[in-house]
Image 1 (cartoon, rainbow, N blue to C red):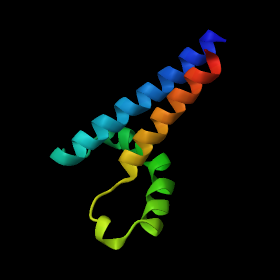
Image 2 (cartoon, rainbow, N blue to C red):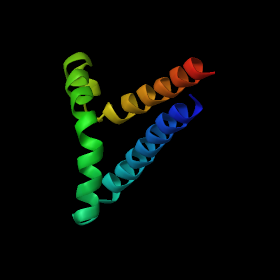
Image 3 (cartoon, one colour):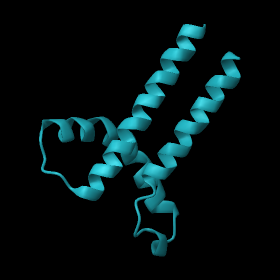
Amino acid sequence: MFLIYRLLSTVISAYELALLVYVILSWIRPAANRWTELLRSVVEPPLQPIRRFLMRHIPLRWQFLDWSVLAMWLLLDLAKTLLRNIFF
């Protein structure tokens, strides 16, 4: 049971790290290469549905920022908390 918890927790933490690197790279705009494209292919698919949902439900004046990363971070934190409560 503990192994399942550690595996899921590690996957969530790895995605959080990938998300952090993706955000930092989006600020500095490096040249596209196979590593940045790999990172984009990992991070973007889960962000797309969140981004579409938020664009439909947040006011227009708040849409100048991409809130999907923050929402994903909150969802990942919620998932970690739920995992911890389920397994311990």
